[in-house]
Image (tube, rainbow, N blue to C red; front, side, top):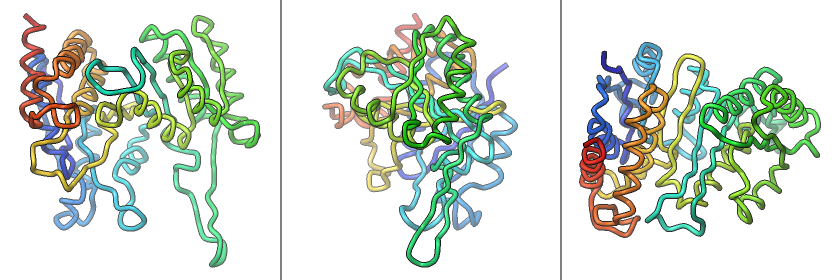
Length: 337
């Protein structure tokens, strides 16, 4: 039986990189039935919302989705579709690998980090209001239940993937109740995983450590806001958001997506790098239990980038989005034999 996958192309450059990703995934031989649904600024006029109910209904039915980038206005307009999806489907765990790829310009080599970010609470949840006319207040909520499930997710991921260490990131020296609760819970969860090394780092020190000696770290588990910041820092260590995949995972549904923006000024030009979405598809295949296919797709992507012959302009080449996707697909076929 084929896997039925909800596909949300997104807007801006989303449809182009999604087409390239589909070509690359199809080359693995994994049987997939794509169920395409629309979300984003391009459907606002038609549906009156950037996130129609049809999208949520499809994800609840298929349980797995892959999504291109969607434009979020800054300072005005609708709230982020990404945040809305996480809340509606309780996608509480954000998984952000940062892996060095030969051929991608970076100051570091051989890095393999994973940020596990809590996705539903903390300051990033956006619970805020005005206090009079001259002050604004944002409420930071950390719960024991939310902290426990994200920490357990991090340790289970580490055990399943053969990782050696989990580091909890916090600011409990100042926010003794909220971040203190997160740290206390992380320590309690860690006690149940004696096979996995555990440590904690204050978030500002963590950022410095990642710049100075990132090779010391493995899996980082963070509250929502710190995770958002630290995961982009880790992406910068391996070449930027153009090679940074992501996943949002809940108990029932998982949605895989690149973490870069929709770059509407490049839409329709067949020039943007599809790597982040293709690597997100690698995560999706692993989630589906298709690990051999995922490994071939990951290796093929690294091989094509390393060769440097059929890559986009940001990777030093002249190929278009579609051509790079086709080159990765061709390499997958070679690896498959």
